[in-house]
Structures are given as C-alpha cells and as structure tokens.
Length: 166
Length: 437
Image (cartoon, rainbow over all chains, first blue to last red; front, side):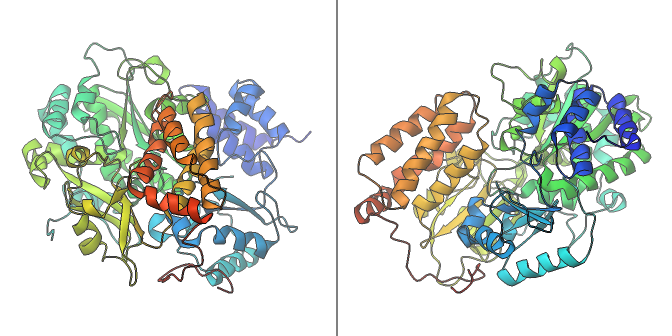
C-alpha cells in the first residue's frame, strides 16, 4: 500500500487542526491526496478519511458526488469539455468528438503516454468564449480545431505544473 | 442607449484585476469605515432593505429582509457565506465580477458580517473558477494586512475573517442549504424547512448571499439607498444588473446596465446584435432554469417584476440568445442532459423525472417521436414541480415553455421523424467548424 509522504501528511494534519471543524477540510484534503497520487485511489481515500477523522464511507459519499474528484486513473491533463447549452450551440458535440479522435481515447480514458483524459463537463462558466474547455483549472476558448491542436502540442512539449484541481 | 457609468464594474481592466490601491482610489473600503464608525449593525441591514436590493443569484429575495432575519439575540458564532458557485448554463457574471475587482467582493462580505454580527465569512467557489479562488486568497491576505479583516477591524472593535472554501464542483452546491452541507463536509443535498438565519452552518445563524448581491452593498452604504434605487430604469427595480450575454450575438460578455434595461437594447446595442444571417428566435433570459422568451418579448424590461408580470423569470440575468437555425428540441434536450447529470438524486421526481423527459426529447430529436409524447412531456414536467427542492421545477421551465411557444416545431420533428434543422445550410460566423465540414 502506498503511503503519503510524511511531509504532506504533516501539512494536511496542520491544515485540519487549524480548521474550525475537520470535516470542512474534506474537499481540500481530497484535492491534495489526488494531486499526490494522480487520482484519488482507494489507498488515498483511506488515508484521507483517517486524517479527517471520517469513515471511508463518509468520504466516499463526497468523492463520488463531485465532478473534480477522480476515483479512476486520469492523465496528467484532464480536459473538461464544456457541453453547456451555449457551447453546444457552437459545436453540437464536435469539440468532444474531435478531442477523443485526435487523442484516440473515449470519455474518461487515458492516452497511452498518460498525459490526457477527456471528460464531458457541465457549464464551466466561460460562455462568452464558447465553445470552451477547461484543462487543470485553466479555461480555453473560443476553440477551433487548429487551436486545440496547438494547446495539445504545447501541453505535450512544455512541462507545466498548473495542476490545480488534481 | 445607456450612458450610465458602471458601478460594480467601474474598476474592470483588460486582463488583470484591480489592486487594493485602485479599489480604494474609487472609494473602496470607505463604506466599511463609515459603517463601523457611524452605523449600528441593524442600521446597515435597514439601509440594504431600503435600497430594494434583491438577491442576484436567481431567487430575487430582498437582501435586507434576509439580513434582518438574523435575530439580534441569536446565538454566536454566526456565519456569512459568499456564494461564488454559479454553474447554471449561461451564467458567468460572478467570474467576471471576482476577476475584475476582488476587494469589492471582500468589502461586501465584511459589511454583511458586520450587519448580522458574524465572526466568520466563507467564500464558496467552484473549481472551474480556481483562478478566481487563488486571486481571492491573495487579496484576502492583502486586506488583512491593511487592517480591513481580522481582529478589531480599523480599530472599531469588530472582528471578522474570511476564508476561501473550494468546492469540487456540482451545480446543486449553489443552492444555499446544499452549500452549507457542502461546507460541513456532508453530501450536498438541499435541506427543507431549514431556517438558515437561525440554524445554518453547524446549526448556527448563517447568511448565504450571491456574490453580486454582496458587491452592491458597499455602494449602497456609501451613496445611500435612494441613490441605489435611482440607478434602475424600471419602476420596481433598484440598482444595476450584471447581464451575462451569450449565444448568437456579436459581442458576448457581461454588461453592467441599469436594472430594467430592455432586452432589445441589451442584445442589439450592447451585444452588437446577432451575426449576419442570424435572426433572433428566442432567448433564455436568466439561465437554464428560466422559460424561453420569444420575439414578442424583446421590449420587456429585464427586471424581476416586469418579467414576472408576463409570466417569466429574470433568474440570474444570464441571457442566452438563440437564432432561427437553432433546433429547440435539441437545445432543450441539451438542457435536460445537464439537469439529469447534475440532479443530486435525493428525491424521486427529480432523479427519475428528468431522465424520462430527456429520453422523450432524445427520441423526438432522433426520429422516433410520437404524438403522445407531447402530453407525456407536459405531465412529466408537472411532476417535476413535486420535487424536494427548486432544482427540478427549474429544469421543467424550458420544457414547458418549449411546448408553450414552439409546439409546432416539436410536432414538425414528430411528423418528419427527425430534426428539420439537420442538413439545413446554416451561416456559421465565428463558429466551430468540424473537420471536413
């Protein structure tokens, strides 16, 4: 079983102790554990629950509820393609299809190099730049195929640690 | 044409947020200093009530009345929650507001805290706005350093602090009672029969307000309730409104205009009209859970009461414009996909009813529609109103208005056994082109 590094454990314990109620930190702790393992795996969920003083089931109730907690392995870059009605008006699903085809994955799958996962997303609040998508917390839009190609290329070639929501 | 200088967005700059100094140069934090010096907490609530400010998050509840609902002898600690969790398709005003002028949001939240005697404030923000969350955390530290937050604010004996609470993303978390559950690390189901002013977060008095609502407060305190009322163009309105305009318009974006500005002016003057070849067919005036508003309402005043008078809702003021090439069965199907996915699953009408409607619409759109589906849609949309919270009734709004205004189009789908908009040559200005199209 993997273990969170001591340093991270101490950091999280400190945050939890400083919070008015430990449970208020549930999402932040899940984000931190997810960031460490790449996704919220079973071991991570158990460790997070222990730190928070919650049962694994109580935390699982939350983990499975939220869009940005990944209980399955995901790529380094998680592409949330907005399928809100405004974006739909402009692409009718074709951004999603284009990305999946381009990367050779289905929804939720991971590219062989471990870099990308494509997920559908409810409105990401970037309607003035429709069609739009969100990659690790950064919105992109209005999208065209060539722009998508450029974004993917940039993410492939330049290491960037803009991982915010994982 | 509106020439009024902006209030909430007066510090909006291209590509970066306003700093503390820039905010203060425009009178920022003067309201806080004035309130702490001159007004008792309840006087602040009274001023907000007199200003006629109504909740900008969609429910339109009078903000001052909500604030006065926190009794003076209510227990402590008390909480203020700044709701920055907008996730209704078409809404993005809160993102623009936070990114433009974070200190305005902070000052509004502190004033709310003072008015209800709260010790702690929480800015609840969705993960898609992570950049806004980081900005707010940075600026909260700046405000704390400047003495506007923390213990004994400005030496006036009032202590209040604000933190950012990140959500992991679900539409229902925008609902006040669900939001409180989310903060407490519980599965964010809405709660019924809970009086938040008495028993909210951790069972204590809690005020949850939309971020735009709170951003109005410093201006009300500084310039007075009468001034705020005078900003509106409609008789019954007050203040300005951030209209988030999107869809088939030349200049989508957030426009701050007097409350009650006419729809036609917002679309044609501020939004630059529709792209060439596109004609206005209808809009959703306030996000995905409002009724379609067709052409005949173009001159309606975009304010709560004038829209209500014609059987519609302003919601959040997020205007999604559709042109004549948009299939309304397809658009409504998309909306139901959203609601079906985002339903928290707590109660049966919502969990089962919305997918049922979605499936009927899918069959109509994809060539398997039958005449009897139309009364079935109406009946099922009626059942959605029996749900636990306001989520499912919101989901029913576009469905019912689809049948009210565009039943012919639905029937056309059924008669032709497919979507009449498919294979029609459409103009596609600034549009996504699928490869090979």
